[in-house]
Image (tube, rainbow, N blue to C red; front, top):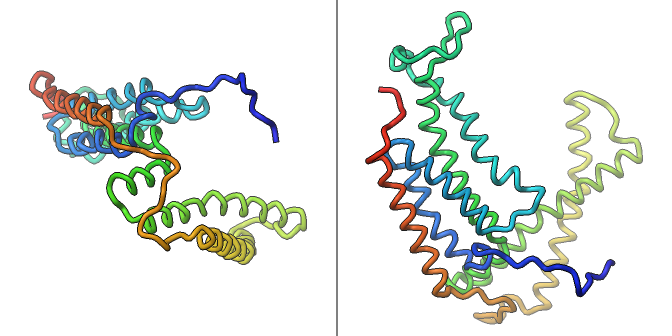
Length: 270
């Protein structure tokens, strides 16, 4: 194991990472509702931009995830706009400029604008949902729910322990596949061979899951999990005044975005 140098640079968490996870979720929750219900595409577009700027300014995103976090909602919006508009009746967009024609198929500007009006809502919801997802971690969300919402810790930490089974299963599945390849039992192509390999992975994976569940149960029992109505917390996540300010400012920005349709014309075809 490599020791960390005491002189290594420690990056300080940014604003949203220091906030209470419940405050971040409460701040963006009204925006998701507004993105679906607001008239016109101006409000969803503004919410998409605000969510992206919030992540860029308030979260220290790892380099390997930056393209997915920042460009993902935008690329999804553009791709969905090209396909969702195909459900628009041809008579509704007959008077708009023609963009593409392939035999009887015609793709007009109104078709794309109709798809854009819907995809902007989906892209805004995706961008808003990413804000608490990248700003908080699963354990912190559970701690905040137990400490601030009075969720029973038996429920919270049991659910957290079950969620942690998933990455362990993926690692064990990779090891089982490697072992089968070494033994030469993973040969063959086609659907029947894939089904045979899958059934061969099932038994050792299930056995490993049972062993891991038994170890987790023994560890929780050794720590007297569930024996008392409350437990002490090593990490405290109180709901501070700064969290209230964060929620209030975010709600104000969402309300301001809701007024945009009054001055920005609707781009959907008549």
